[in-house]
Amino acid sequence: MEIRDIKIPKMKFKKMKLNTDMLEQFEEFDFETMEKKYTKNRTTPYEDMSHYKTVKEFFLKSIKNYPNRPCILEKPNHKEPYRTITYEEFGEDVLALGTALIHLLNLKDKRVMIIGETQYGWYISYMAMLCGVGIAVPTDRELPLNELENIIKRAKISAIIYSPKREDDMKKLQEKLPEVEYFIEMKSEQKIEGKQVGLQYLVETGRRLRKAGNHSFEEIEIDPEEFKILFFTSGTTSNSKGVMLNNRNLAENINAVSAYVKIYPMDRLFSVLPLHHCYESTIGFLVPIAQGSSIAICEGLRYIVQNLQEAKPTGILTVPLLVESLYKKINEKIVNSKKDKIVNTMISFTNALKKAGIDIKKKVFKEIYDNLGGNLRIVVCAAAPIDKKVGLWLEDIGMTFLQGYGLTETAPISALTPEYNTCVGSCGKAIVQADIKIKNPNEAGEGEILIKTPTLMMGYYEDEEATKKVIDDDEYFNSGDIGYIDENGYIFITGRSKNVIVTQNGKNIYPEEIEMMIDRIDEVKESMVYGAKPSSESKKEEKELIITARVLPDYDKIKELHGDISKEEIYNILWSNIKEVNKKLTSYKAVKALEIKEGEFEKTSTMKIKRYKELIH
View 1 (cartoon, rainbow, N blue to C red):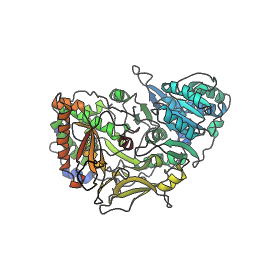
View 2 (cartoon, helix red, strand yellow):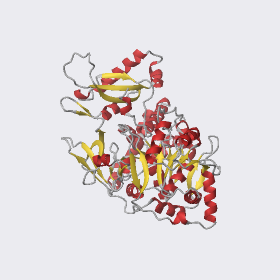
View 3 (cartoon, rainbow, N blue to C red):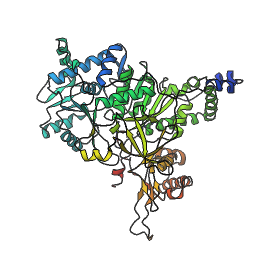
View 4 (cartoon, rainbow, N blue to C red):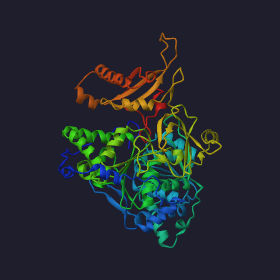
């Protein structure tokens, strides 16, 4: 997945026919009576939630309980079908690799960087580290060489497990960084030659050691409180910090999810986000492993539709930019098929049936499901706000739409939507182990979100001062996010404290609210709102910031709607639409200036715009 200059590719879906014949049998159905009988919702967490203390605990349990079930599905190449690795194979490879890393390379308790695109070698490397080798340092595969070198030095890396795509960079680093003991290529079978060795060779060597009776790696006991993972934040508002986590942090995420969401061994999650991010590596990898579920790897965004149809996942972990793109493409296909009115009627009808205890949505909207593989039941979205209408639409066609909230500092989940009582628009409730409150709420109940949770980091790496700034004496983490909590405990994020625009009159403007409205404009691909300083030529005496929208036009949509038009005409169309948005905003929030963005916004791995870098330019 590209992180910088990321582009959502064109997605091709089949034509929609959407047969309504099955609805006729319900024409004289007594909805009112049935609704009274069936509208009973669970309001409390599942009683059988897990209570794991370490990752190794559920790893060993799953490879024992589900040996023949599929674990990881990976395509050898685009033309071949998915290859399935079972839990037994996965377990053997992890234990073999851990054995070799310790007994062949002497990496016990040392720092090992893992860098590369999502692949089987990444999974077994990370799990081996968590199960007793040393400290894992998952790293953004898109980092330029100078930033990568900086992290290697900062983290005191002893070995690097890397994708073949970074081979040239590794050769350069080997010359520059003599302190790195080993460079381990994920797909290589190369024996040890100086500092070079292949991961596949290590796995085979580890197997031989285990066959000869060496089971010491499997027997290593994990201290839940010991520093085991070092994540470097992606930094949307500042340069990256090192976040120190332990096994307890990750295990409590699994426990938290199990209290709100049921994941079954027959479930299959679709992995589309980068694994170096805590969101994907914890919720997208460790959660399914704990439940005996399988994970299908997406080859890349350009293949997402084909991979969905082939892998047939039941769940997908995603971010707003991606799920909104899927929503737009599917609805465009529905409109082009002239079925939009029928779909809206079917939604209303099936919603009434569902309230009465009859759920036929998956049958009625089968063609939509088939475009996404046929089995999708859960969509989880996190990392940024999402347009509420997208979540409601997913629920309207029968999927369970969940939102999560957290940061790398909370490993990452601190709040999650309970599947048994969803609330589209919120980012869920505090996980059962956490306490979340609002600091100094204003008249609307808004304030900074404070989080006290066992998933909270140990602290920032080699930065005690920064740690003390965000964790108070009562062990609450100052998130930097602004929001409120409703009477039912659901959390709503309204902005980011570092992004807030403060007017001369002391009014707070959260740009995310305005951006979401601008992004709904057909001709807009993405936007970023900020407060620009008045020019020195301004005749105004006041120094009020100018609310400015920096917009990346959707040129394909513009061509479709308006044909080939000039830059000036594009500007006028966008500005006209933004004026309509302004009518829905209070006057002090109104956008006063428009900038056309040339080229894609620079983004983090979860597709959030790096504001601080944008504002440098």
